[in-house]
Length: 457
Image (tube, rainbow, N blue to C red):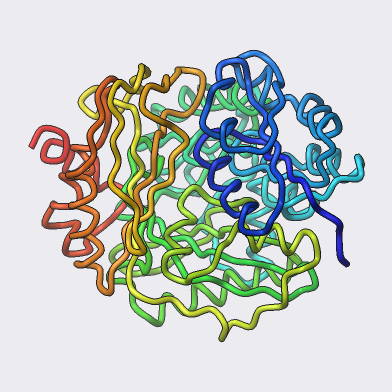
């Protein structure tokens, strides 16, 4: 059904807000930026057609205030809301409130957000769809850890204690032996309660040599769906991604095909609507793969897929929400070449990758081209504050081969000049040049295994 959309409010900030604005311009849509007091002069505010303040700097008083975001949409006469990633993007109640206000919600149904936001529910739905799932336990509510030891024995060590409402590596802790289980479980419950308002946890088997491979999907809400190929996100620190690439190196074609079929099967069963990502953990030795979770939003690393397929995922989201996206056949989705994304963070790798806020006295990034993309929400002179995630840019390279994409990325990283906050640029350069990375021997423990070479080499 066609929906009238002339003006879109972006319920987010920084790099993703700037990126959504670019697609809106191509679609001839006006944009409304929202901003905290700390972001009054931010790049996304300058790029938008209109802007509306929504509160003080802490996210809980601004970007996480659904009522203020909706008030801003009403005040500015917006027709639609795009949530980006993070903040309210996977909040089913917010999606319902947007729709109840008569606005177009650019995202999946609130039901799907709830289904997949509840990690145990998501695992159950994956099993029903015939998707392999890692051994795991039932959930343990806040303060309730009776029988957690018995559950751990059944799951097996090593294992992960995971927040049911968590995501993006947050609310996840490894346990190698029974002696640390109860203490770690209680600490994870406490942290999850503070971070997500839900202290429920569960246990999940941990694979020693694992790869993190995810499948970009797009559903049409009627039981049909397509995939836009996979991304390997195995280069991580603190369970959070820093390098992503597509196609996944050294992944057998038969495994890639089965993974894609499993992802699409789950989307079809869920009658999923819009862009989403189904994440798998892959045993690096056997190539067995298991469902981890589904993210019901656009991903930070979506440009990797866009570079390979030539598809604008954000424009697809918007056109689907307003009833203008033509149905796609899987044969219409063709990936060419190889793409790599490096996330540039204001952080200090030598100090356990701790955030490094400060003023960007010098912030010079390489010139974009057809084969090199730069996504950022900062300009020279801007302040990187401690209020928000310290990612300051994403550099995405493309080449006919993986070696060509790596070479182009190294040239781009060598050209970056940043003064002020400490950054991870040198760490990323070392990663791109590392013999094991260049050979495609990637796994989630890569950074820990080679940290001395990557940080101090």
